[in-house]
Amino acid sequence: VQLQASGGGSVQAGGSLRLSCAASGGTFGSYVMGWFRQAPGKEREFVAGINWNGGRTDYTDSVKGRFSISRDNAKNTVHLQMNSLKPEDTAVYYCAASRRYSKTVVATSSQYDYWGQGTLVTVSS
Image 1: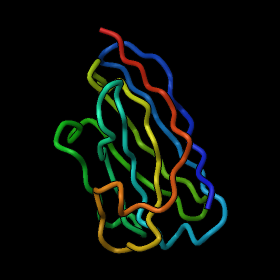
Image 2 (image 1 turned 60 degrees about the horizontal axis):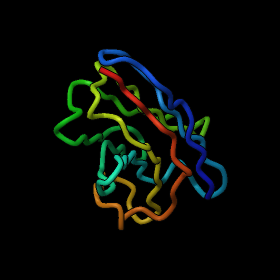
Image 3 (image 1 turned 30 degrees about the horizontal axis):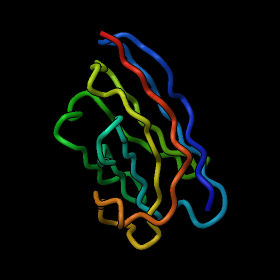
C-alpha cells in the first residue's frame, strides 16, 4: 500500500487547508485511516481517524470542532479539512492506514501499518 499526502502549505491563523491522501494497492475500503502530525522537537501525535465506512471518527481534543476527517472509498482517498487554524497546528502531517483495524478507530501510531511521506502545514500568527 502506498499513501501520497498533499495539500499542505502556509496560511495565516484563522485560515483553512484541506489535506488529501491518495492510496494505491491493498484494500483501502477495509482500512482504518488516520492523520498524525509531528511538530519540530515533538513526538508524532494522533490528529484524526476514520473507520472503514466513515461511520466512526475520532479526533484529538485540540482539533475537535475545527478539523474534519472524511473518506471516499470509490476514489481511495481520505481528507482532512482544517479550519480555524492556529500556529500550534504547525507540523508535518502524515496519513496512515491500518490493515489490522476496520470498524474501530485507533489512535496509536504502532497500530498503523502504512504511512505516507508527510506534508508540511505552517500557520503564522
